[in-house]
Image (cartoon, rainbow over all chains, first blue to last red; front, side):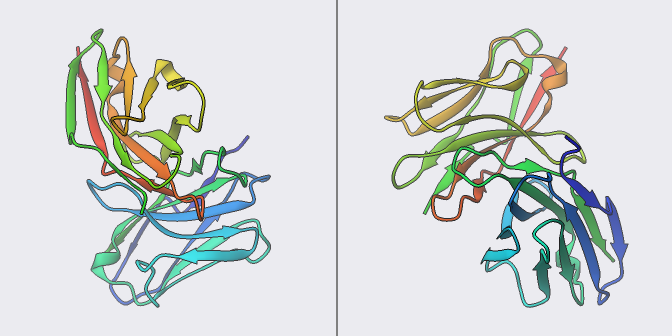
Length: 114
Length: 113
């Protein structure tokens, strides 16, 4: 079990630039979630996929944010025209379908917008 | 709407002493509750969950949690704390419509020698 993998671990970008993060879930997991965590806060839900279908998007996910999971395996989260307020840890998690299944998290991508 | 509250920002305990990290929940229907731990610059690690059944749930690393329906609480406990338990702890409740987890604000546990 290689766990959930996220790339890159750290990203520093200038305001206005676009960034893309990648998440590789545990292979047999059909659900994939994106969360955002700022310092001193709990993770906040952004969006989730069941296989390749994006089933829910939080109101936190502005038009500058887009997520994809084209083949139902890995996922990407893109932020366009980054702002300083986008600086945060972006966490990916995966799980099997079902209420009993816990989410398994990756180590996150820390984004710093200067 | 489902939510959880963690009333303590930080808990300090001496090594070897029992520890409790508090969590209360607000849900419609039966709650599905979880505890996660986060070490610096890492993702969250699953500790334990309550779905149904026994009110005392045992999890990883010697942790357990007690579900109390009348008090709407799900406190995390450990009989004897270790310095290595020092970390950030999050309580979470499952949203029944989407299966996403809704997290509390976290409690920093500091275990001192």
